[in-house]
Length: 343
Ligand SMILES: Cc1ncc(COP(=O)(O)O)c(C=O)c1O
Image 1 (cartoon, rainbow, N blue to C red):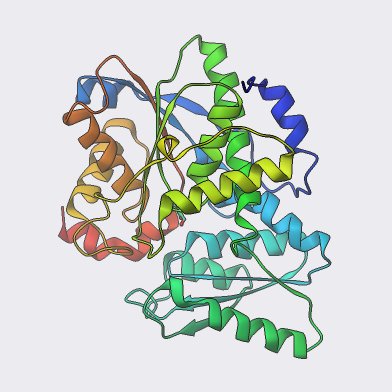
Image 2: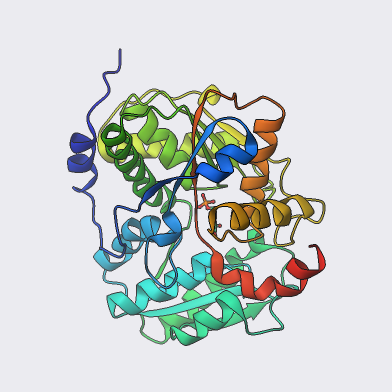
């Protein structure tokens, strides 16, 4: 039978991996008394990963500490990435590259937000990234554009490294296993026992949290709320990430499909990259009760999910819940019209 290890032991194991320091860690854990009272039920805590630093913070900081380190180890002089035009990943990758003294080149989808230089797109530019816009249906089809960009850079004698391709993701997830170690220490200090974690995730953050939860024997339910409908099976993808994390760390932590609960019903009627009425409402309620800003595409929708799960009794009134704020707030400014219209 698998024996859980301590947060300190997990840190030792993970810190054997290549890592560049990018974040302001540990991030605060805050109690949300007014939201708790408003929802009339579980105690709600928030893990402030919007305060991780690195150009306005967010969940990518923890991931990039390990994914960028892979590239730096291989001698990369330009970090390559790509996603939607309001990508938080691209903004934080641009900042990570600047901090490491290498270049950044990104391909972003020419989408309904790429016509205005605002929010994350503005920050990519200020951080000195080379940005190319490509016409594809969604970010899932950016691989070809990235390959083409890499080939061009190589022809120019550069050493590109593509961050967050699938082989790279398990390293990103290590950052979120460490986040659970922080949570374990923080809850130990306040003598509380968290029962459920709610997080917006579709690729790295949730598998990292699941790994940390299991390896430390925390016994929390980790509920992921995805912002996007991928074409692939998310449970299989997450199990693949968990398996690889085990290999990288030389461990045999057991995982099965039943450890993975990732919900798609809060993406909203218009899909990825568009506001949802429930998400915007949750964002406003949270801002008004706790003075903390979410954003409409990821964390607002995840908070709407948390509120709904409380309402339908899936999260019980006696629970202690941690909402992981994965950041993304610069996008607020790119969605001003929708945020005002849907209020
Ligand atoms: C603010 C925010 N939250 C959550 C996510 C989901 O992160 P991941 O899919 O890496 O777990 C992202 C990234 O896409 C994001 O930008």
